[in-house]
Image (cartoon, rainbow, N blue to C red; front, side):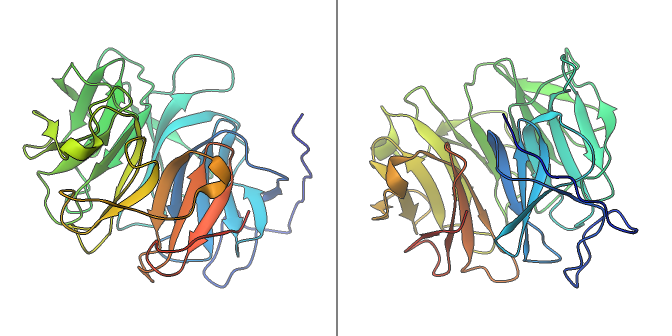
Length: 289
């Protein structure tokens, strides 16, 4: 059972940049994390999308729920330029699918923007282009869908993919990457998601749980791959990989995110809902929650 302590504050309903906590619900633990992102306007806010709503870890120690929702956000991605805008998909608490939805108040309230193709969809993997925020991807029932108008309309562009995570290149609008669980390693698309090819032969034949790109160095990638025996880093666009020594207590790493205000700072989330931090671009890590 999740132990929840509810705290009500006098006014307001969101985090501000002076680290004043307003209108949040205190939480005791993270349950079944599905996404991770650092607030682009305030580095002390780390967002965690979960099976039971959207949480924020503040100052690396205080955990809160944003808003009243306990919906399951299977897919989650923040807008790369507007700190108030988030996108999500998944399941409502009552059952069914959420479709593709948007928050314009920092994750407190949500509105469905589209049902997607053959929806309402339940995107288990989502990505937004940092170069062109109107370009979004979502994976649902074996098919990759793409939107060119910020999620209002969607089209199926590939129906033969098994994906656990998607990410878009920070410099090239046409390039996207996918982590796969079926032995294909990391896939890369150079035509906005239509066709996909293996990024590295070294990762093929094993499961891959994540792929992440440095926000300003597109040749620098991170992955958690069976063939590497853990977390790995590439500085040549994925041609070669070096394993990072930390084994994260034997846990599988599911998500990696960067602090865009200090790009040597990274966070990761494991399948046991533990959060680790690196202050030296992924070379060493310490558990913070």
